Length: 326
Image 1 (tube, rainbow, N blue to C red):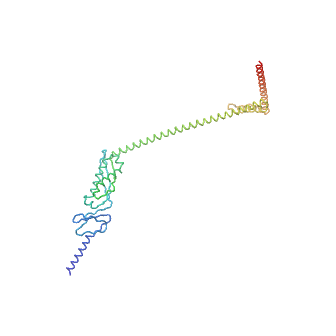
Image 2: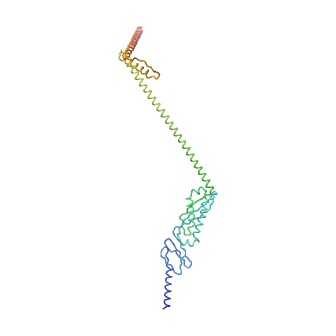
Image 3: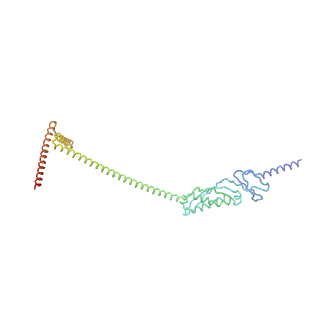
């Protein structure tokens, strides 16, 4: 009974060991390789997998998730012989666990050295100014080169990014002075352009003001001349009417004309700046009498003139008749 129990226990242990060696559970995001007598046979996917116990064994375990590889700082000489310190970060993903396990030894170390050497190659082919201003181009070149080299290892390089580029201190100071000089130059150019534009605008404004002033003076002179012309026409018309009235012996018109001129003369005398004392008749009868006397004198003068004109006309007619008789 004891021997049978020992055999039973041995069989149970053997079955448990066999099941334990044949059942493999692969976590999500991983791939395991299977080796039979040291030779690769297949790759286990995430989940429950069965292998041959005591014959097959698990070889390499790889994560197929995207992973990060930090590239340490290194000094690189650029194309224009400037020494800069560069560090980077790379992102990769294992696509084929068998290739990653059996095509290269120490995968991470290989990727690290491959990335560092290509950084030196790409950075060394560029000038310092181009290096500092074209990081996107550098990242694209690095990604293309490193991905092509790591492809046979069952790898996919998803990104290669330059983290920092540090030129020497003296170069940084020289670049700062150059940038300051460029900004001062740009400020001076902008200030000069602003002054020029302001001068042009002031000149244009002065020109427009002079043009408008000249046009205003011309318009004022034109209207003043027109007013004088209208006033002269009115004066001529009034003089003609008054002359006609005087010739006809209209004493009221003569008195009105003389009184108007008389009062205008008195108003001019009274408003003159250099006149402090004005003497004029205060009685209305004196003023009217003066106007009446002036009107009588004007009537006699115009009557004599009319007689002279009539006699001259008769003489001209007689002389013309005598010439016709001859």
